[in-house]
Image (tube, rainbow, N blue to C red):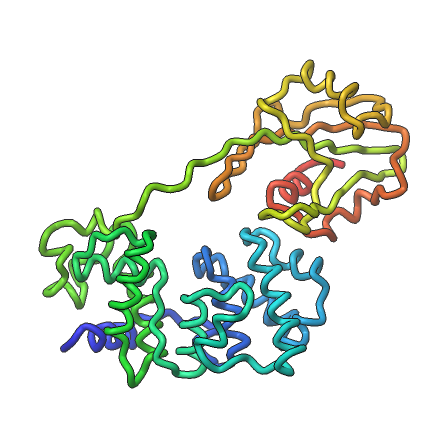
Amino acid sequence: MDFNSKLINWYSTQKRELPWRETRNPYYIWLSEIILQQTQVKQGLPYYDAFVTQYPTIFDLAEASETSILKLWQGLGYYSRARNLHATAKHIVKEFDGEFPDNYKDLLKLKGVGDYTASAIASIAFNEVAAVVDGNVYRVLSRYFGIDTPINSTIGIKEFKLLASTLIDHNQPATYNQAIMEFGALQCKPKNPICSVCPLQDSCVALKNQIVDVLPVKLKKTKVTVKYFNFLVFLDHHKKTLFEKRSKKGIWQHLYQFPLIESEKSLTAEEFHLLNFEDSLLKINPLDYSLYNEVDIVHKLSHQHLYTKFWIIDVESLPKEAILIKSLTKYPSPVLISEFIDNFSF
């Protein structure tokens, strides 16, 4: 039995029952694929269910406000995916009357859709022979064939895509693609792969050469940047506060936060006091201020570690753009902010 037949046989008995596997509707498949980018199934599943419930068609998604979409996405991270999701929905409704492109080449033109996502949608929704290559596929192929080319190098990306394209089952591309991804997720796992009962064990190069734990090879990660954030939580006598929409490009673009001051290091109360005279945001004549957390809250992102303090500032009144404290939860905000809102006793 050849490589892909073994994978498909394994998949037929071991696959998880997931809602997007019960449909060929490209909208649902696209939605699941965008949600599952950089996200594990167990984390993404409730978000998929929430989006399908609130936006059952691409027309519903296109008509929604960006704020409501970001709010529903809150906690999933990589918020550019949500912004691209909305932009693509509006584009498909406007340009194609709500009909998805039905081939890899045209799917690839959509915002937020790369090689993997285009291949997944094309094969699963339209049965096109388009091989997927995601983290699971890289792992399975590098171990089975003993390939030590770095998977995040230009050469590696081309090499693995070519190999995947030669292996895909032309008669059932959708099943094969889902099989190899599922195999990587459940059997050929990053840590503690289940080699003892693996259907590919008799011909796996990594197992034979005892190098399973060193494959796949990845180039060193980008250096992590450390930043120091000071969020200013203004509270006035009318039970209002300031909550700003981030307009600058970045991972939190269009999300809401308390006014922010970045510093070069973690500030003490004495150092923060000096800011009262230097930063215009603090010229509201605060009556009193206190530090919510003596120890920095460390929020770790893919390429940034944010050392964060929340400063509680009591004032008589705030500018007209202030909002009621009780309305804070209506706005989409980063997890760092939403967790503070949930935990702080306003």
